[in-house]
Length: 162
Image (cartoon, rainbow, N blue to C red; front, top):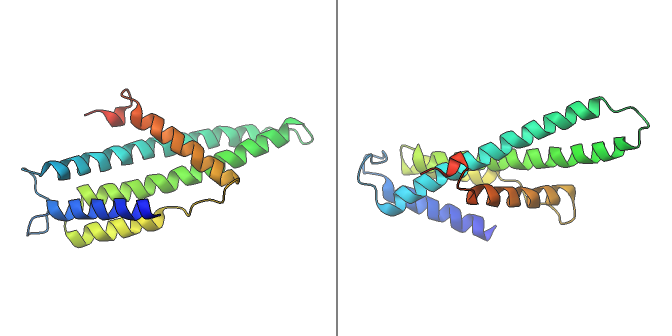
């Protein structure tokens, strides 16, 4: 939670530095730190949106498979467990995507420092509470963190294009 607050404070400071007296983000001549923060917010939102879309698609496939399970089939329990995990993963991915989109809006779209701070507050509220260790939700969050790190490090991912 402390890391999240530090990150939000850093983004807020960069947003405030990048705003003109009119309250509108400057078009040209951005300080390098502000330009980097804007690009990183856009990149993160793109990556998290892609992961959420993939999670929804995976859940839809499992929903279709579960719908065709024959009652009493030994594979039914395995499919139900897989669906429960996919559902937890999709919920977590969606919350992360929403929060990242709001942070992107705070940095790239807000017309005033007050708008930026409002977006950042809503983004922080959109994040799920840390799950209890050992739960399906904790496992889904851990797998999501691995997937995000892999996507962020992949130079072929379209979200990482300069």
